[in-house]
Length: 251
Ligand code: 13P
Image 1 (cartoon, rainbow, N blue to C red):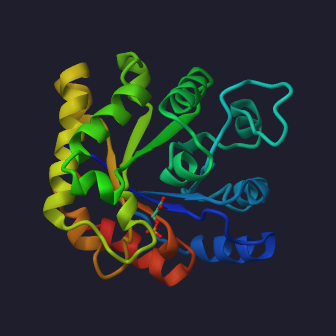
Image 2 (image 1 turned 90 degrees about the horizontal axis):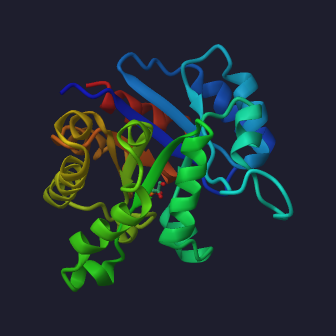
Image 3 (image 1 turned 90 degrees about the vertical axis):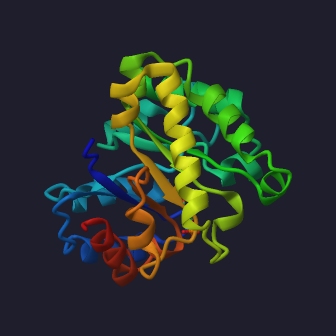
């Protein structure tokens, strides 16, 4: 099946409002053709980002969301708040959320459910620590993360999920997984979707790779059979690198 590639920039906790506006104005120059381009600025920059990109194909997405609709949850942002400013997709389960903010599979599955129930699309991240790979436990770990996070969704709901495989040891380290490691894990993840939802859904679900994707390795990674684009951290923070990566996905 021909799946449209996605290149999504996860800006993490970077960029003041002025820096964000400057970069977004440059990003308007990106010619996407066959690629879906998304950027995930911090919460403080989202509203303005949506306004600047209102006539652009680039989608502005959130880095996180809370599972409750509203109420006494100081510091949190709801699905409804995101939708009210024109944000229709969120990242959930990034390894930094799992690691530094103790977001467990249970917490994440609640966030996924709340998002889907409120028509917010999800980029759901999974990935193993180096220690898990060294113990040869990486496939089981990813199976657990996918099972607990996603597999209680029904067939209609799962269609609104994009999966991102981001091995933790490859994030921000300059050390990408090699092409064999990437392809075999993406194939494994697609297999998990196949086992639960069957052929049609597993062949349409997009699975992104993240972890030190740069202009010089993007093309090779994006050419792998089960890789449908990338979730880009560091290299999404400047126009030239991000533009090169989008071009690499364009074929
Ligand atoms: P880097 O591209 O900086 O390794 O970050 C990847 C990532 O965590 C994207 O979500």
